[in-house]
Length: 214
Image (cartoon, rainbow, N blue to C red):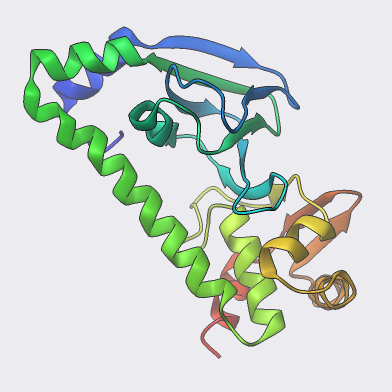
């Protein structure tokens, strides 16, 4: 909500509850009763989805500034799962507080609706990337999405640490683990990433992004 009017942001912050969670903490699961919105103040959280017959799996990361759970607030039940992948600070905005904000100023519903548009843009961008024919480009794009730098690299970014392993990248990229592993090792040899157990550090996001236009 960083780009929303100052009065609206202040009204939201006054009604938020600060919640500190440790890495590995499940914040909510798919199907849980939705009680409000969560804003990421610090740290990082992983978003799990479970389309069709598949079991829940990691699909996105959310960085500070992201607000999550709006679909659950609308439907009453969480449509995705949320888990802290590192120690994090969350702002919790209860559903009743959302109702009060809109009741006070009816036009505020547009502010909350814009959250869904932002999320839709991210999903559309990811879908476009996973439809790439080139495996190396597909993996590079997934790493950029996971790092929150698909479109632009944050000015203070040095090493972008991802709490994922080969399996998660392969699943999202829809590529076999053997092929995914080979692509990741090639990127590491080129000095663009660094691999560790269930972790990947992106060292050259700008280079990865440039490869997507080749």
